[in-house]
Image 1 (tube, one colour):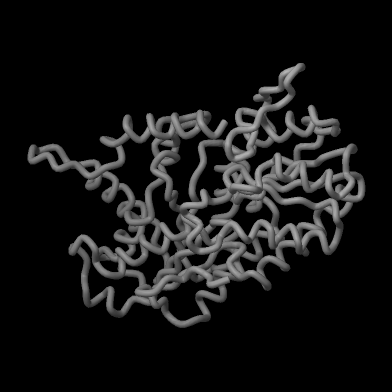
Image 2 (cartoon, rainbow, N blue to C red):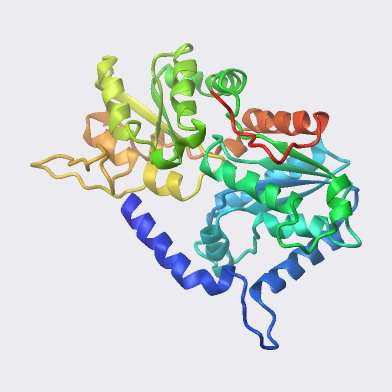
Length: 365
């Protein structure tokens, strides 16, 4: 499924350049950049109630369940932070384009973080404090993009903002769910075990994260998955954490670890370890794609992964009870105890010093 997704993404980018990029035309038509900025600025101006704002930044999705999760997250943030205006942004141009086109659901318009940050600094708005909260799970490639959006904003990258305002605005950053190798990993493991200890007593609970390609694992983000599995297995040895895009930690590797632990049959519950249950959860985890051959079984690619086969089908064909009834189709934002950890990061950002945006906020371990 990874190859299909990549090809579709490439085609979407090619087809959507005119939709997401800034136009250089000199005619009377406004560029998409200007149109989008006006739309976001009007939204912010019409909804501004306070002098402080929180911008939640998610990768994005095109599934209604994900949209519902984002909407409920915004509502939860408004209740928890009543002195702040709360907005949501997508960092993925592909998801923004698909959402606007109505892929899978009714069309909805989401915009990249730069539009929101620019709107926050516009005349007539100019928030005193801006908190950008990453809704990423691991501090990897997508989180780095969030950091870069903030750096561009703070450094007045396009030269069209008020430098005096930028010099005085309080700019803060809330880190991803699993930012800290000890505190965050152990806190998430504790909450997940509280939620699923009844399930793991009956069989394996396998969490499916996304993962970074190795070439992007500059900030040691992938290690959070193995750290989380270690922390969960302190509660029960039948917890496992794999990914769709981390070398040596695909579903094939999860199966190897299960069998090495002597778990060669029984029930396998699968759960997305992502902020929302979107395309990966519905297709890569719980979908019906399957390359099983009655004579050859499964054939892995050069990295050891079996592509175009869901976790559900893969574990089922390998002798486990793994079907629609064992799919736990909930994103992490739908779990209040996990959402609270993200909110804790937001509170810590607010209580901390203004962001030193000239330096990376990625962890060192």
